[in-house]
Image 1: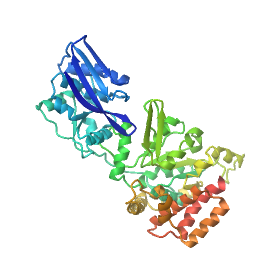
Image 2: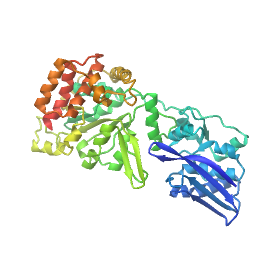
Image 3: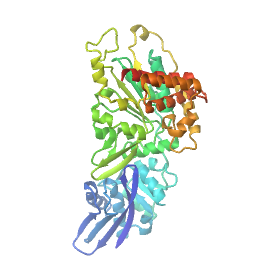
Image 4: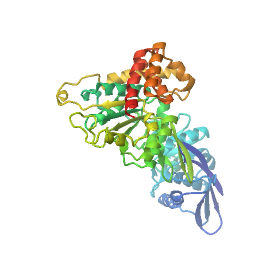
Length: 504
């Protein structure tokens, strides 16, 4: 007797369909799983056996063979437990074979038959919809999978519930999509005393997804400013939330059920390895750059990161995609993030502080910031000097706009960009524009063009730098509600860029 069930195997954010074939035949009693399973999949036979025993179902004294097809595709993870159990129960004629064959399943089995949540329910639901099948998953994974409206999602607490559903004794209702509540009480931008230029740069970076580096003495407020970025970013749109949640689902970060509309904010420590930042490991898991997709990647103490890690950021920053290549896996993850970096001007941190002069200036700063290569620094659209705040300023009342007011301006600018790029799939912000499209949307007038040429001749701007200035100027114009790129917009964009040109 042979029965079929269906599940998925993950390759990056792609979930590939896998057919689970189960044959029960005469022969020496055995329970074998073939089809390139890893250790977790091979151990499924013991979990399935124990779960069935807990339900008072005894396996026959026959040879049980489970084949995971296609056999040349690596199978990893404990989510194969449930489809293997379904195929076995169908082969034993306990469950109807046709119903099982019309379902795609994933879930880990506890020894008492309880279904344990597993990563990847959201991409699995998308594959199930493409295959025109329903999805069966653990109860905790149902809210995120149910966001795929084209797929009927059934979420069960235990294998017993699954059997009662298929037997008609207690049919399950489809799962409802869940959404994690928005986190309130973001740190307000008004809490930052002084640093008005840095606040303005933060607003421009958020509006156009421009990469930003803050350079200043210790305690000047760099990390404090960066932590306020989450409070001025608009919520994720529905497509962005789906993209981001697929990556977080694979990483097992959607443990609260449902998806979130808040943009991710990732802040890895400077001792993080290349695999942690870029992605990799034995299963080629997504790294911090992908977990920050559609959100913010904050890298504090930027020069302290290993140089090999910093240099690997260059290609993902440009392409918005990272390829993780390993001996047994070549997977691609999206990583269109906003990079915010913070650095001291030198090793001691007081190179730019007149009150505490650095004893090794200027070599101390050149050696320290020189750990980041010129091509990498050229990818920062905005570079801001963050001076120390005077003690007298700390006693002053809060000044400037609150995060809510700045967020409203940022959201209005993002709306202008969404309208501008409506006919260009894949483009969402000014930072994504390039080539002919950039020339059309950010065409400077004659006065602005003359200013750009003078700055380029004097400071030796690269072609990349020239185009990044145009993108930033376009964002500044959007914040001002101006359709035309004018000299003040270009001049402000140049002021953020030329700080880097003078120091590099």
